[in-house]
Image: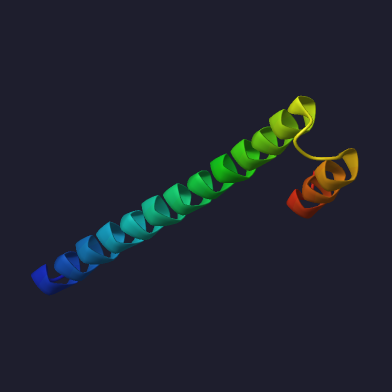
Length: 64
């Protein structure tokens, strides 16, 4: 393999690692927001700020 081949291989590996890191962080952040918003709705329901119907609608919308 030539020097150019090693450079291309190295750059390809670096790019793939960067893509994996970006996708992991994007998905991790998304799931954290989903849980916290549902927890907020649960707290609001427990305080009486929203009705059971509104809480159930939000819970179904979150897919839980």
